Image 1: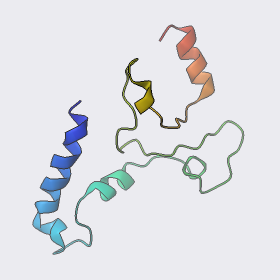
Image 2 (image 1 turned 180 degrees about the horizontal axis):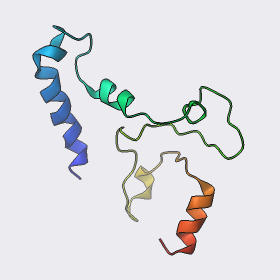
Image 3 (image 1 turned 90 degrees about the horizontal axis):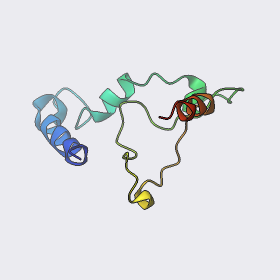
Length: 97
């Protein structure tokens, strides 16, 4: 549950650094830089090219905000439209995970 407040501290600390206050960079924090540097999605997964068979649209990078939490309670809050590999999902279900 600390993920809820970790972004606040991370953004506040990096925004306070002189480099990110406009002296050497045109951004005010490093979140966009980090998110884009860790983006390993293909052009199709990003939605920049038409999807071919077997590929899915992945809306978020791996290094992005928390989209959901693993919990059986309060499913109302997990209203994010998830993208997943159907073949891998079926394998996980078959193995009881």
